[in-house]
Length: 217
Image (cartoon, rainbow, N blue to C red):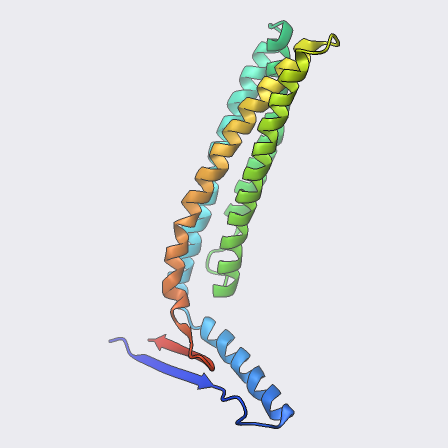
């Protein structure tokens, strides 16, 4: 049978006029908050981290599959095509060699992470850090799209290998478009985990002039 213990620690302004005692009370409040964070059931938190890592690994498999496919087509067609098509496949091959490296490192990192080794603070920090990275990458993807469009437009106004500019621009448009969809989809998938964190965070609550925590055991 589960039992619930609730405790609130408050501080009344003006009730203690001694700076040292105020500092000690503040330190106690901070320590109490971190102690409460550490009381989250390890099994539940491990399940959340496993869920997050599985989403990351799935994303890296998708990115890696896209990279391998593009590299295979690029390697097969670069030498067979002429004009802008040749440069299109050439850029796809080069671009996705980088994507493949990112996917491999990302999958390896997620696989090596121990979901049971992270406490609540580390779990929250890692979860939101990845979401921020994905949003930042989405911004870069928009820049890629703009860069690809610029190269295509530039190819219309130059006589110095315009086919190369056009082919590279078309490739960057394709790769940037895929990455934009990928990063947004990956962000949306991980963002659903924000709701999963609420039960863990509900153990700590503000009281207006202090903090409180609830333990269930």
